Structure formats: C-alpha cells, structure tokens
Picture 1 (cartoon, rainbow, N blue to C red):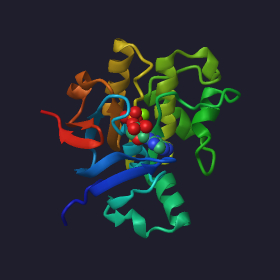
Picture 2 (spheres, helix red, strand yellow):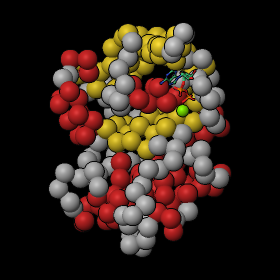
Picture 3 (cartoon, helix red, strand yellow):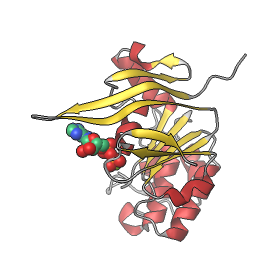
Picture 4 (cartoon, rainbow, N blue to C red):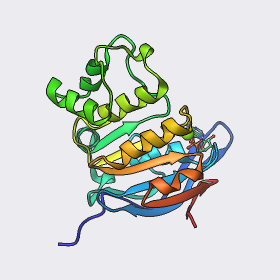
Length: 217
Ligand code: ADP
Ligand code: MG
C-alpha cells in the first residue's frame, strides 16, 4: 500500500470578508506532508501563516479547495466527526502558550486528556526536559512554557502537530533547544515562523508571500 500523506492541501484558498473588502489570505495552496516529516513555513506578518494553521487544524474552513487528513476529505466530516478528528489527530502549539495560570504544569498537560493519566503526562514532560511539575506557568521561563505546551500538544498521540510561531518569544538559544525537541516528536510537524534562518531544523521549507506558497530554495 502507498503511504498516504498525513496532511494534504489541494488548491486551497481562504478569503475573509470584511465590511467593504475581501482579503485573500491564502491563494491556491497545494502541498502534502508525508508521515513523520517536519515542514517549516516562513513569511512576514500578514502573509497567511495563522490562516494556514487554522485551516490545517480544522478550526476554519477553506473558501475553496480540498484538505485531506490521512486521506480523509475533511469537508465530508460533520461537526462531531470534525471534533473527534481534531482531538485524536491534531496537536496545537501557539505563539503565546495558553496555559491556565491556576493549574500547575502537570495539571496543564493533563487538561486535554479524556481520562486523566498522570503517568503519561509525566513521561511527556520528561521527554520535553521539564522538571518540578508542581510549579505554575508564572514561575517558568518562556522556553519552559513552550516545552510544557509541546508536552500538552502530544497527550492524545496526534498524527500532526501544528505550531504557529512557537519560537517568536524565545531567544536564539531557546529557539534552537525547542526546535531540537520538536525534531524528535513522533508526529508530522507543520511549523510557522517569520525567521527563514530556522530552515536547517526541518525536512522541507516553504515561504508564504501575500498568501502564495513557494518552496524555499
Ligand atoms: P500571519 O499569521 O502571517 O500574520 P494571517 O493569516 O493572520 O497572517 O493573516 C493573513 C491576512 O488575512 C492578513 O491580511 C490579515 O489581515 C487577514 N485576516 C486574518 N484573519 C482575518 C479575519 N478574521 N478577518 C479578516 N481578515 C483577516
Ligand atoms: Mg499569525
């Protein structure tokens, strides 16, 4: 059997309708992510990175085109199937980790679990090189916060991890540490950044310019 791509975009566009204007955020994107690959998408502010992550994560729907996850056309899913797909197959990491301030590290990681499993959460935190799990997000560095978010994104063993500018708040060394950790995860990775200098950490890189996707040279 041919290995299906994990995520495939086929001629995908996203148009937002504002009061008097239309904004084409993404224009005819076609690409596919093979299993266990890592892909970087770089582009300046406003180029469409977050729109791409929202579409790939089934949070928003395309204006045209087709998005398949593990070969399943996502437009065929009803609301509950879509929720299940998101919960079972997709992990998210955002620029500002949305950890809950009143839960400690371990509790934050356990939050997306359908049945709480401290052992599993602990293992993921160990893999992410985070210790002292009774600390609260306010006691952690930005790098540690993102490592906790990484652990949390993996609790349901997703096929895909979508990371929208996760290193934007990190310095160079913290960025390198975080990307090295991400390189070891057992999932297909799609990550956006405004820094094309990160391309060495990835199997494949693209650039977004005004919603048009190009292979990085
Ligand atoms: P990036 O993450 O690279 O900054 P975005 O995907 O956020 O890019 O935005 C791409 C374009 O789409 C920008 O011109 C932005 O203003 C526009 N846009 C994003 N979200 C909306 C929205 N909800 N309504 C209208 N326009 C939007
Ligand atoms: Mg953005």
